[in-house]
Image 1: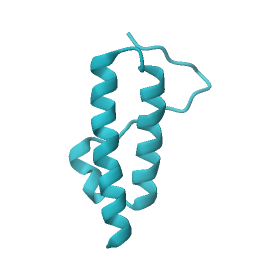
Image 2 (image 1 turned 135 degrees about the horizontal axis):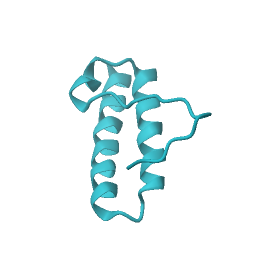
Image 3 (image 1 turned 90 degrees about the vertical axis):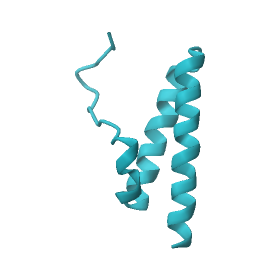
Image 4 (image 1 turned 60 degrees about the vertical axis):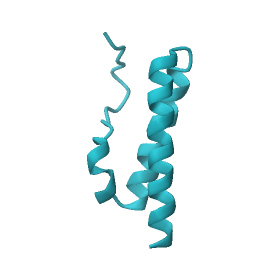
Length: 68
């Protein structure tokens, strides 16, 4: 069960298979969300590892977007 706060805006992270269609600003926003989640789950090795791999993937997409 996850914790939710009434004053927090819910902004779901788009599925990884859609990231290549996002704008660079959207990619940066997703990366920031993932980094926030990594901070929250840093003590959970399995979740943290998955988040780190996702952050690496999106970082590469951002870099590729910048050279396009």
